Amino acid sequence: QAHFLSHSLQAKMSRPVQARRLEGIDKNIWVEFVKLAATYSKVNLGQGFPDFPAPDFLTEAFTRALGGGNHMLHQYTRAFGHPPLVKVLAQFFEKLLGRDLDPMTNVMVTVGAYQALFCCFQALVDEGDEVIIIEPFFDCYEPMVKMAGGTPVFVPLRPNPPKDGKLMSSADWQLDPTELASKFSERTKAIVLNSPNNPLGKVFSRGELGLIAELCVKHDVLCISDEVYEWLVYDGKQHIRIGT
Image (tube, rainbow, N blue to C red; front, side):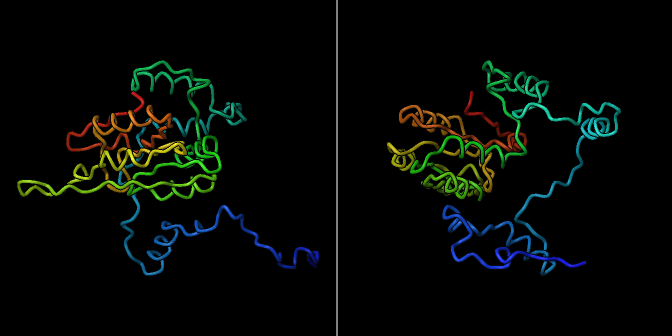
């Protein structure tokens, strides 16, 4: 069987194919490390690999949904989230946040946290807006801000040496209040908060969250709070949601 390509498909474009907004963000650390680990048959310590199965009630419900006779379960539903699902989520997070939530306007279901973050940056960040990112940070924040036309502004968590011979922990990494305040300007649109933090594992204290909240209110700035690890808290630590 013969196959034909038009001349236009065979020729290479004379101008750049990639959009300018992607310049400088074409490298991905996860892609590189996964490839290296596979190439040299090494253990990849850079990613989390769950060593526990999904709960039985979850797998059983999933199996019932796939194998049941109700074909209406597999149709298009509301784009922002299936109505029964967002209603349950609203009830659940109302208790956690201590505030009333409208399931139709305050809750949105996305394909994972990546899409949630991407939608936030695309919907809220304009060309030239600044977004404060706390270092160290999960690698997707910076390129997502740039793709939205924003400018990342970085502020580091700095380690305080532990006292009395104690081992250093993630709690010893803290923001300098003066340094953080200096990053806010009239161009600041948002700050990204990740607690518990990836990669440090730091759980931000109530005092630290209060500082961030005060600066956001003072400068009329949004806080995009990534709490993807909210249920993985250990050693007596308490995850406090800044939305409370």
